[in-house]
Image (cartoon, rainbow, N blue to C red; front, top):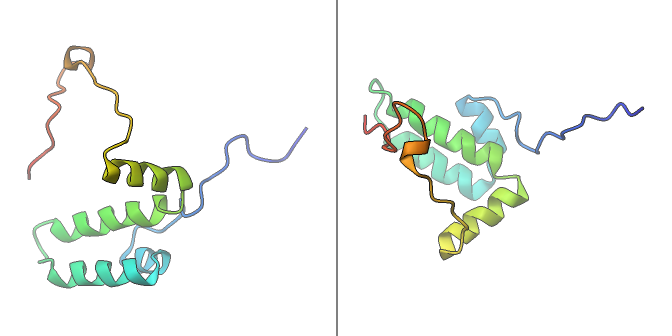
Length: 100
């Protein structure tokens, strides 16, 4: 019997969802972009939360080689996609993003 977990946790998955946690997990170039975006984002309307959450995702998932490969493939237009029939998606699903 092994004491190892069945599923390993990807590196970066435990980045705290705070400005400081995100800041610490980013490389210097990303950190500069994050800081610039923070500085330009108004407070009080929820957009600051959106910026931090977006960059948290970049910080947490950006250490996963498969995620990086998928991002490069998406940028090159070669990412495999799987079409979805909205009739199969279930009730209430529109396929649209909340525009806020």
